[in-house]
Length: 246
Image (cartoon, rainbow, N blue to C red; front, side, top):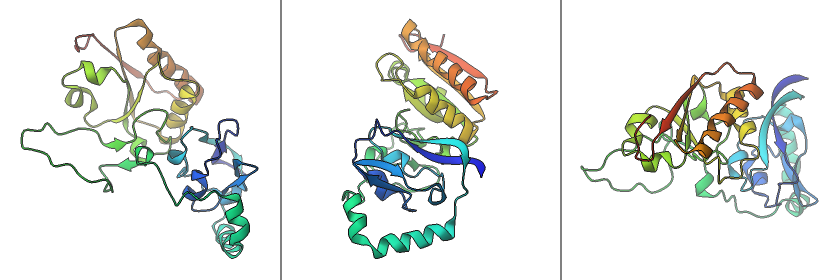
């Protein structure tokens, strides 16, 4: 047994859609009694390919004592469920491998998107966004673009208020966006703590509006740092309603 990353499934949140079953190449997740369940720790490599396909954010990565991932046992297991397709198909809903494009993880700097590229005119200002998704509820704590990154946690009104948001704040950073007032923020601090633990970002900038409720994003970040036992320092940026950095 060793401390390592392992999938954790919140069965109360799970809606039984079965998308994670198809997303898990190792077959570690199966549908049992209408809920997604981790069938064995030795089949889970902890990389989190299943996270981005869950529409209800029921899957997270936790660090705990777990049996080591066993590649040979996994290959044998995959052969076994391949030979017994009838039983497997009864457990796993047919999703045709569908992963919602809005939740498909993409690192623009290191991979090509399978979405059609739009034509840009010579007058277009280039985007500085380097990833997808960016909403805190949807991002994966083990996404490669978070590893050792300068992380920007930003309230979702900030980019609308700031005319030069991309060049002033976003350029060169990985991003997660959230609204501390209107989002269902249960689990946000834990998601951030998971990012801090798994990716160990180099720096953290929190950008929020000057309205009082928006400072909740800073409190959320501080709580996550404490939960993760991290020594990250927060660069706190407040933006006025007219888009100026205060």
